[in-house]
Amino acid sequence: MPREVTIPDVPASGVERVTRDARADGATKLVETKNEDGTWTVVATFPD
Amino acid sequence: MKYFRTIAALTSFVLLAACTDYATFVTATDIGISADANTQNVNIGYSRTELFTGPGYPEQGEAPRAVGFIASDLHVFQPHITQLYATGDAAELVTFPTKPTPPTGPLESPPYYGQRRPLVFGTGANVGVKIGFGAGTAPVPTSIKFGYNREEVSIIPMRREVPTATSQDRYAPVLASMNMNLGGSTQADTNLGITQFFATGSAARNLALRDDIRAYFKVQAAEAVKSAVVGKYSYDDSSKKIEAFWMPGGNNVNQTNANKIRSCMAQNKIDGNIYELINIKLQTEREKVISCLPI
Image (cartoon, rainbow over all chains, first blue to last red; front, side, top):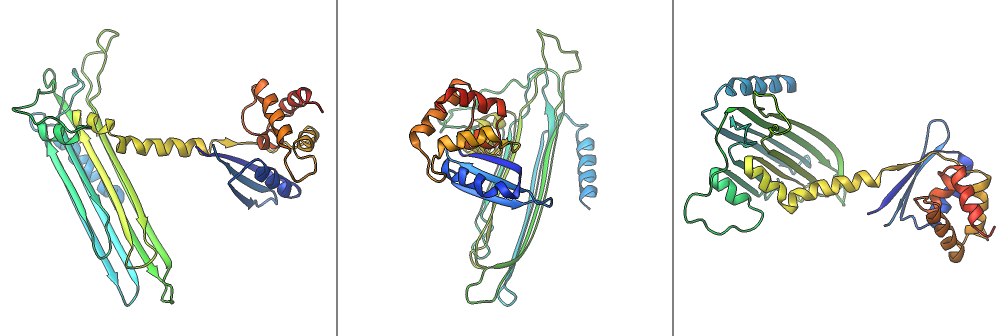
């Protein structure tokens, strides 16, 4: 069963590092969405 | 209009509910499909109403058996429809989870005795889809309008007596389900797959045992778990230490170190993965892991 981890308020300066960490830990899907306040929401899906 | 229909239906239910010496089971289905090759538009309309009203047996937790089923692909040019309607022993036999032995006489009747009180169970569903396709060399959907309206109601009678620990209330089972799937990338292969079940009494019990019905809930539970982890961003110096140990060069994971981190997380009963530990776990949890690592 895949596991989806959502981090809602990632500062713009940290998005690249967060997505790199997610990929390094085996994320199969990544969705990054910019919020109105300039922060980002990162949703990473990990396999079982 | 929607509320008018709901109120009208509920009024009918209440009026019908006065009768407990009749079991009334009604289904009504309307389907409309149109496709225009000139405008490249497809319209699909589907409407279905299901209603059961009759006696409930609150002392036994029973209701008369009835089952209604419809499945259709609502394909634009080759629609297929399968429909089933059954009551009594037929409803029992057709909903059996495994193929039943052909009966030589009437089946053993469920406990239909004792107090009789009005039971009402009904559903109404309306679905409308309008899809427009582009006129280019590779026609793809360029516009879509979709409407869905579903109403479900059940009035299950209880005994008049106050329940006690030794004489508890028993609810009669009812079950209704709807599964819908809109598909197609061109006008010719557009379809709206719909499967609906409606059942009362032991027919509802039998359906609830079937894998295809239970599968709906498995999917929903899986989706719920999938979206369950939402964490607050907590990256700090302790995160940096673990990250540096995990990815010494900044780009590639050191698998030996990764296993050590996971082992320390397990020892400290910290769930999730390393990504979560670094980015959303509490600083105190990260410090426990750091104190366990050869950093």
